[in-house]
Amino acid sequence: MMSDLFSLLDSYYPEMVSTRRYLHENPELSFKEYETAKFIQNFYQQLNIPFKSNVGGNGVVATINGRNPGKTIALRADFDALPIQDEKNVPYSSKVPGVMHACGHDGHTATLLYLAKALHEQKDSWDGKVVLLHQHAEEYAPGGAISMIADGCLDGVDEVYGTHLWAIEELGTIGYRKGPIMAAADRFSITIQGQGGHGAEPHRTKDSIVIASQLVMALQQVVSRETNPIDTVVLSIGSFEAKNAFNVIADRATLIGTVRTFKKETQEKVKKQIARIIKGICLANDVTYEYKYDDGYPPVVNHEKETDLLVKVAESIVEVSQLKEMDPKMGGEDFAYYLQKLPGTFFFTGAKPPHVTEAYPHHHPKFDFDENAMLIAAKTLGSVTLTSLKQSQKLVEQK
Image (cartoon, rainbow, N blue to C red; front, top):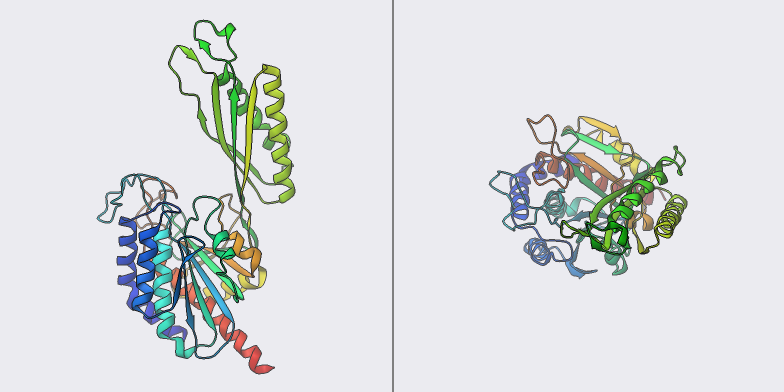
């Protein structure tokens, strides 16, 4: 059965590449993926695979039933793009100014569509049910996963699996980890309200830029001096805005940043530390401020049994040349919400482009990946799915 699935996927590979490139040329931002959702719906409609649209927003959920009832496995792919100008010199570069697939979600979608096609063609040879979760808005919190779950996308599902094409890992690599694999990803903003004035008379002002600069430096102590070195925390300021004329001292400055953690208690401690530092510096400078902290996605925490299954099946896939236990990554992923509800695992599929020493990282204007990775991802997800369904059926028969 597995060899037949792999043969089908091999035969679909040219179509998979074509679909990925179409999606790459026609990206849509988070929560605005209307045409992409229609494309996915049309794909399933042509195959007579039942689906639900507008799940939790722009989500699409398709269902394939095997020959007999059994376990239900969910597979997820995201399909939103980023507000980045595509700078690649390739025939399939984005046709939408300022928007591109710079994280591989086009590849995730193409992978899942053709895996679904292959599983549908084989549906009379396996027992159980496969649910295809095409998720919108992974890139922008609150994300699409949480609203799709609220809309019932996991109802009746027993396990959930997903992968991320990873362009900085060599093709043929499957990266896995039991337990936490990706961090909680939070956002905060700080606005300093000082007192502006003439650049020649700073003594008559309360310089918001100088005060915000003190904050940038002081906040680094949250990690270096107030966090246990064994614990893992990232605090980064990503935006510092105080636009003004050259000869005017700005009355207002805004900092925007992110915090990444793995433990809830660490997250709460960091929130309080940031608040204390802001209050102290603003009090010392006699200015007011506004501090806002938004909890982002929780950590992605893989389950042991399902991760062991992933490793076992990946070992038997010819195209997988390396199984790599990954260090935890500080990036965030709303796949975390699925794993809070159900057992499953999220893994990385190496997709480094050929003939490059160092690949452009994710979210870079020249980001791209080796499209062969989609075939490896499809075979790995397909193997996990059919193996888990088969194991479940054996247990039923033994009883």
